[in-house]
Image (cartoon, rainbow, N blue to C red):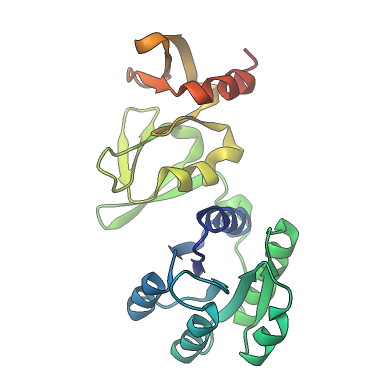
Amino acid sequence: MRIAVIDDEKYSRVELIHQIRQHLPQAEIFEASNGAQILTLLEKETFDILFIDIHLGDMEGTTIASLARRLMPSAQIVFATAYSEYAVQAFELRVDDYILKPFDPARVRQVLDQCMEALQVTPEPQEQIQDRVAISASRHTILLDIGDICFVETDGAGRGCVVHTLDGNSYTDSSSLTDYENRLSSHGFCRIHKTCLVQLRYVQDIFPWKNSGFALRVRGSSTVLPIGRERLRELRRRLSL
């Protein structure tokens, strides 16, 4: 299942992607923040479902919808908008559905189910994959048990993340840390810094660090992981400290 989310509002885009992953964790999701980006994607990729914001910074979503319909006649196209009056226009453009902002999780699930039914796609039972995460590395996909991951950090080059496991191995992936946070937050992971996400049950010790700050270590690694000042209170709450 290949899904495109086109929205110039980053918060809306991240929230919708999060809700989609909650229902379709195996989906391959692409995102674009403006018309130029999605036009580039449409030249190279095909999609099963497209969620398109009506008002993009450089182009109207209706234009994107019309183009996508011509390029991918069988794709399901869904308007994502804050304005209910676009329901009529959606019908006229043969758009398959629309969802209103702020996104309601139940409504997003309903739309996804309807799209998959129209595409004649049967979702695999989530219990088969909900405890694993797929990592694209060296042109192949690695499936890691979530329980084996102790922390995830940015790669320092702005190209993705490094996933660290209890056995001392590490895997580089092109996904962003925010993407990992959305995928793993329900599995006991907590963002402790803008560059790092840790599995709380593997936190081994917390100690004073540079500039009157704090840091921690997790089981399976000797790496010192700084704790952002603005995230310390939430970490303490999650650990009941």
